[in-house]
Image (cartoon, rainbow, N blue to C red; front, side, top):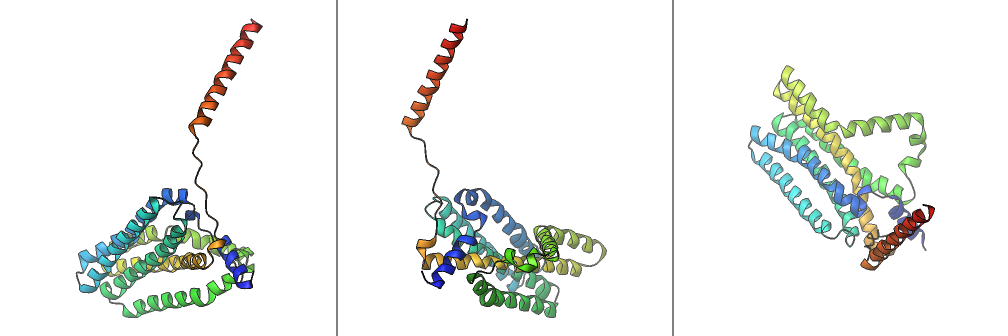
Length: 265
């Protein structure tokens, strides 16, 4: 085994998403689609009600088209998830990437088209491109060489754990906080303030979802080294013979228990 194959095997084994298990995929995917509808389709619909320009229409129908594409792909996997476990990995990478692009497009829509803050929109877009280049050119090559965030010195330090905990808590409620602060700002300030609040929260979520590209790269490694991927086995169905044997055994035990009770009497 070469060094490249060794690190590819390590990457495939260690970079695991909870939804890669077929049963978890079947149970949790509706929640992910609900999140996409709330954080992408709903803000795009609100923007359509305010501004019906060509850019707004393109972003709205793009979000709807991406949603339909992901739903159809998920249905295809859902029909037989144990035979399509590699496709589950591809779906996870695709979902994070398309979700991130949709969120960033909505953030740029609210800042550039609705609020007319072109400098802020350019800043959001620049950070997004810089983060995308960092993931592809720095993070993934480092992860291929064995780097893991949870094993780094910064993560193990008290400051790193505090920052990580704050980031996780903020990311989990970023969309809800954005809608809440947008409503509060709308009561006290102008509609312009609502656009800023929504765009900031959409941008933060898009930056966080962008790190899911690592699962797309995992799919590339699986296709390159299919012998390194371990498939989950489907649950074994109990045959009729084993069921009948268990029923007969339970009946015999019940009969022997009754005999013992009669002897004791």
